[in-house]
Length: 248
Image (tube, rainbow, N blue to C red; front, side, top):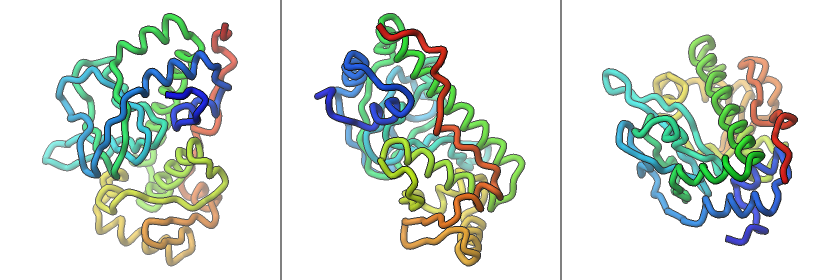
């Protein structure tokens, strides 16, 4: 891989620090392989053994788990530039099923590849750790939304979260039109509502002007209004990097 060429993972990390050539070379090594996924195809399956992680190059993935009674809860939605199945760093079995929401391309790499990064590229290791911590904070925000807000606020939180993630890698920061590649069933599983309830709330939000919809395109004419009803905090805009080791 030509390290001078941009890719989603480099774009995402470069948002927080300017990557060196050496760091780009290491990241290129993680992305040497490409694996195409069809929409609906499972990347990894909950409870099965896995020691692989994946860089998402294109498309959307989501991580989900099956609850008692067979209901599905979508835990995370992954965009290009995300490293997925990070739980394999702690456990030998998959913590959540990861499924392609759209056709996607992933780059698999063995978790042992991170050993070299931690040993020889401490600033890059700190950056990856910081991003993983950010993801956990964003997940806590979603849990708060699911447990303490109404359905409209949950959907607003989801839309704003997707928009903030998109802005990191797709060069559309400031554009408030989102391509929503999730079905209403998938949205329902992400926000803990029924499909019927999601359909009604989306219509209400459209009728009141909170959002505008045309096919899968969702325009957010007044982002502040969605923030006001959801309390959303953009966890992806900034990252504290002042404590990182000096790059040599």
